[in-house]
Amino acid sequence: MDLRDLTYFQTIAELGHLGRAAEKLNRSQPALSKSIQRLEESLGTRLFQRDGRGIKLTDVGALLLARGKQLQLDIAQTEREVRDFASGLVGNIRLGCAASMAEYLLPQLASALLERAPELTLKLSIGQDDVLKESLMAGRLDAIICTLIVDDPKYRSYPILQDEVIVVASADHPVFDSPITLKDLCQYRWVLGAPTVTARRWIDNVFVERQLPPPQVQIETNSISLLPRLIAQTRLLSFAARETLEHGLGTSWLREVPLAETTMSRTVAVAVRAEGYLPPAVGAMVALLRDAGPGFFRSE
Image (cartoon, rainbow, N blue to C red):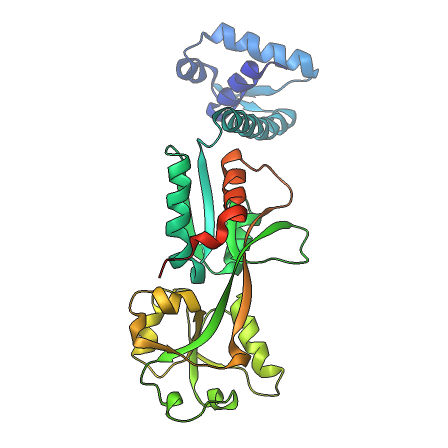
């Protein structure tokens, strides 16, 4: 089967008219007729039948059209792979990053990548880790930076650095008026991510494992940038990365609620799909993060 004949066939099938296809392809009608004839002879069946002044696909023709489109996608993917290997770090990286890590991690990472490969392009997506993992598996992202993924064979997850997530409140919150215990936090309401987010599940479990009710969530959000002002202007508690508290915009309004039980130590990692094509640029980025990840913390 000739790929050019298949391309002609797809155009004819989509237009349903040999003459219009000839105009679009800048080919003569006899040339297109011979192309279809070659395909039919190689397959041993008819692909078109008359339909008034036009033509329409047979059942076999409809099947070939669907398979042909998939074949064209496979060819395009193959061409991308070849170009990527030939170009090294020239390419595009579709990178997702957990919202709690983006502010203190991505600027340094982007700078390091562009210094090594000035022609590289980045498409950055910020979100909660549950959404990022779904996008990675669906092929919408090439890699994600989030909490280390363990015991899931669908991902390859590589540790890059350690950080902590802590309970925070407005600097003048009444929780600071007396010695603080975990039970004291139950009387206040919270702003947290969705229940499917790793950090949210962790903080919920802290309370449940000690026979206390989980945090009362009054506002659920995936916007980390919204948190400082939101917490500062309410009596809500929240759960945020220590680096965000120390270096984020407007965090002078906030204060850590110092409890060992609610301090979550986590491993930040870069993850890719266990199966599937990994562009060279993405592989180089993963290697950079594994080798120099701790250096991407925001400087004090």
